[in-house]
Image 1 (tube, rainbow, N blue to C red):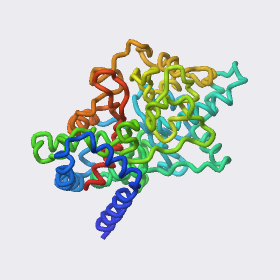
Image 2 (image 1 turned 180 degrees about the horizontal axis):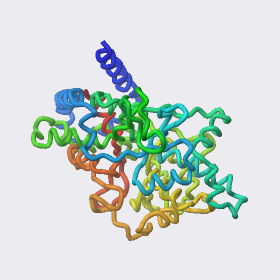
Image 3 (image 1 turned 120 degrees about the vertical axis):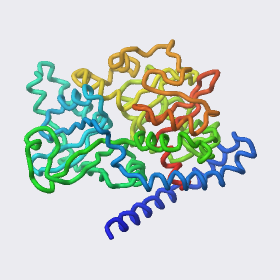
Image 4 (image 1 turned 45 degrees about the horizontal axis):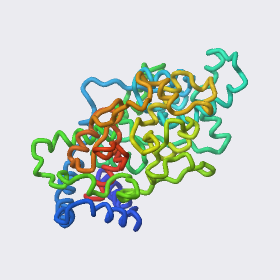
Length: 416
């Protein structure tokens, strides 16, 4: 009965996701289709039905157990951990999110992600503005728990813990992340073993949750790709060029927001430093301040960095905030730092005009062109640390669109 109820709930949530597309999105998708041949447009609906059904059948039959590797490292942060050490743990372990463990409650109470570091960095910068002599011991008074208490005093609701169970279907896993707008979720089980780390490691309390794995959309996509790689004819939709499908965010010339509306900027944030020619894609030039970048990262995971002609030079992602925090940038004024300086301080190769995005993989981001097939895009997105593709003109390298992992799964769910 519980399993049937869970499936019914998942199906209802999927129906809700499908119904969110507005008339604006539909019109954008129709404009996008004009890039394809007339024959491709007429064939797409039938192919989408067949391909979507096969994809959905696979995702519903397979479970999160298949995402858990044989040898697995998990990282859990105690809420009493100093935030400075959390910065370094993220950077040194190469992670983008970690569950928070409350020893008093003996339970997971939330998730700390790279996006949270933006607000935490700002808070620390403001707090330390007049304290140049602050030692590491003084700084360690600022714990994860203290930050959460500050949120509570300001009536800022802490994000609830979003997780999945190992027996959940891959469809449920993908839907959970897409619906919540998150890139990582913990796979939690319940038993007699608490997560490693601290005194919880030796506990045998019955019913305590156990962290088995931190999974993401790329792992679900990689599982899907492995299954269908040897039978490409089974998914004819995947042979369509991405430039002809209602996926992603594109410049106005190529259909604008095709799959979902862009989240609005926070109140009071100016758009004057965004590159208007690429609207509704949010992009900045190298001289934009890191403070401005933090503002416009609201609701999205990365910003293309372009020159005055819209040519792709680099990318600033939320993961770069981790590197900035690990380098103790909060001890200085981030308001006086531009994005080029921030990247130069956090990456081996500094941003410069000679960066060439013409290769498929450059640094930590990947590019593609409108003519690349959906199958090619999915193979690239299933690679580690590739969360989005920047679509560029094959000749000029001007940015034309952005296709993210969440865009892809929203599309697959809508075509199920």
